[in-house]
Image (cartoon, rainbow, N blue to C red; front, side, top):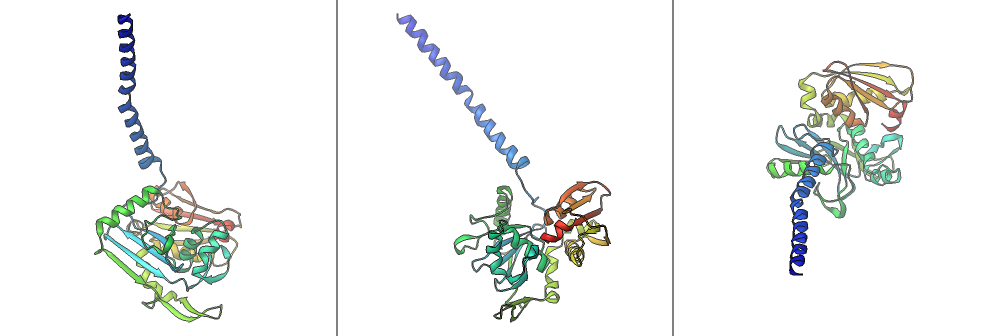
Length: 297
């Protein structure tokens, strides 16, 4: 009787031991899966070495365009008052910048509309965006955003590394990069001065595109006047040299960025939400833009 009981207890002990033996394997598997997701599969745009800009909603519904520059080891914030008059992207009219945030919510695209509007009006290339709730000023305060966890962590680590000494804040209104005046709604506010803003474009030039002397060829299939030219100006600020803008037959396509160097293609395609096509010469980029692109530009 005792012998049978002992055998049963030993059997149970071996079962518990077998289950416990696999616990470290399970933990290691979970850690490996997380690392695989974080470093390989999770969406990210920032490689930690190139410049990147983020459009941040400020407490007065204005914008702070925050530029992370690892090469110079600095972070520059360009503050744009919510009372600045802008032409809203996607042909949604003229209004004060502070109203574009709510319009983006109404249109179902949230902060993407503000980021597109900032890029089109100021030629500040910024496709990443985040809102900062409750009047907070930190980029890392939880809120709506299209920035992945991986990129947010990378930006946080970079911010911690440079500290306060590497930070610069420029209020475009206070520093007279914007002109005070009466707006189309009859009230006073700020207007964009292209001549004054030209001095700020250096913050948005991409070191890699500039150093490689990347040449850009634009095929204009939009059927609209001026869209391709404005698009070309933004590309040049990014660092690509626009060699030609060719008028083509009208098409309903959005936009496709083609080139032999994946890194260059991704930079431009990400900035304008275009499709990528890895083909052609390394230092040559071809961009096809159609009527769908014109409607959201």
